[in-house]
Amino acid sequence: MRVILMTGKGGVGKTSVAAATGLRCAQLGYKTLVLSTDPAHSLADSFDQEMTHEPTKVRENLDGAELDALMELETNWGAVKRYITEVLQARGLEGVQAEELAILPGMDEIFGLVRMKRHYDEGDYDVLIVDSAPTGTALRLLSIPEVGGWYMRRFYKPFRGMSAALRPIVEPIFRPIAGFSLPTEEVMDAPYEFYEEIEALEKVLTDNQKTSVRLVTNPEKMVIKESARAHAYLSLYNVATDMVVANRIIPDEVSDPFFKQWKESQQVYRHEIHENFHPLPVKEVPLFSSEMCGLDALDLLKETLYQGEDPTQVYHEEHTIQVKQQEDGAYSLELYLPGITKDKIQLNKTGDELNVRIGNHRRNLVLPQALAALQPRGAKMDEDYLKIRFAS
Image (cartoon, rainbow, N blue to C red; front, side, top):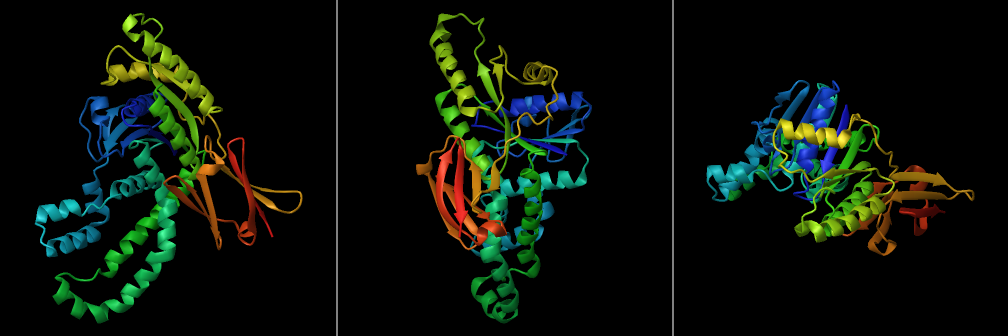
């Protein structure tokens, strides 16, 4: 299955681009699903038809779906939901409020990954196009396998074992005092089972022949800066970007003086997009005279965007993490971090893990055995690559 994730700052038009890409894939005969994981769904508005949690037929070879976190929670994590609801009710919340609050922060992202894994395992589709949340939420989604693995290794597995051993002893005392039971084995096992699913999906997300991210941006200063940061953070999580879509460019034929200054600034930012994201290919899409709503409008966007191309191709192979052996026997771990300067990067090695922190994004890299036994002996930025030298 080919997986294409569309992301970008809110309001840049990523849903329209995802929908148009789905139409082109279906036209080429690929069985395609466009899945919205954005809590503020707009895929149904883009296709101009009702969408549900389950795939809905849009056109021949094309289905669409909007993730419903409540339904996903009930279907796949019912025991946990019932336990959280019991705890909240014991603290005085009414039934409906307790059920709503049972969806803890971050669960939308987790269920988005689980849904992707399910479709990948079932193999009913040739192409899965994910209309993801705006960049910040999308990055949290893609970081879950890495961050979740760290917590599972360090805290959850020991806690699960301790809970199973102590539950028969503590439960008779705990229940009368707290008003609710300690979590059962079924409740304790569910998060780890989810983690195992997500960990398996990570291999798909980090395979740049199967999965690509496409950044949708506009020729505006704030949008470009956020897209550039997103590109670097995606690379940090070893997820490859293969294309940038510069959307809503004012056409040359628009000559109204009202747009003169806007067109001039767009010219500057268009050049900046091509320069900042090089060597990624950049596709420019004009600002259309009508909104991109309905299949006719999306067909026009599809033809403008792909012009007879196959969207499932890998437009650019991005190598985000590489390990190279040096002539003196040392190793170099190279991380592709486009646009990031060395002063913004914090590094720390603990045991067999290398902690890389950029702003509020952090990744714990489990090092190969050859590097784990060595010590970092310096780091430098070289042509968008952070090169960390490991030696004895």
